Length: 288
Image (cartoon, rainbow, N blue to C red):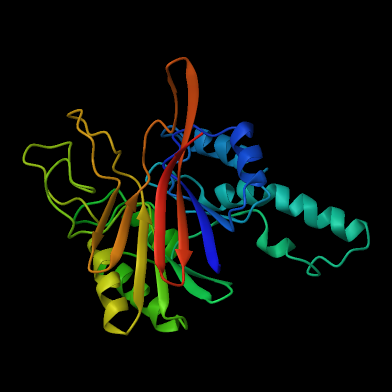
């Protein structure tokens, strides 16, 4: 059966170690996606986790979260450090650096980028949306976004996403993001509802919602939207739904925080398994 298998790892908040590296390297995932927030709120903690993540040999994409707004170039360098060492070793051994899938292995930052994946009859493009989102009706970290991405407003972000979609050659599209889109409810316990102020409110990204609508407008089939950010356990102790289907699109929030926890004297590690098939998508939570 033709399928593309993606392991989705929700917001880390320092919960990532060499046990995880070994597991995902042994897995049969074609790709691992990290929804962001690598560290505990400081640039140094994000870099420390990125250093461990760089040991991963599996192809992986990391969407920077709102906690990952330090030096983005330094963060990217940490994530690709091991891959650089492997390239150097290949050169020294006389192997052609581009003679294998070496360029595709390892961990890379994403954001305002396109990533095409094909397996048999399954051919899709991943659209990596706006990085560093805190959600809500305003652009998060405008100075950082201007310096790092040339984005100074939500309107500019929406235009960048529309331009990316104009470049997509496949019919099937999957969106990766840190935060989800608007339009999926404004109750505090909704999938991306606001749980930290009275009255709740829709806390999704309006530019992402506009991009999803635009993708459909230009004839794309939006199979899934994968994000995190709004923790599945709300500040009121309620559980958000981690998946919602609307207009034929599956929306997935993988931010089960903490993703490593102890229950009944056993340690559990959470991620989401996403399968893209010619007939559609399948998804399940995994607790290792």
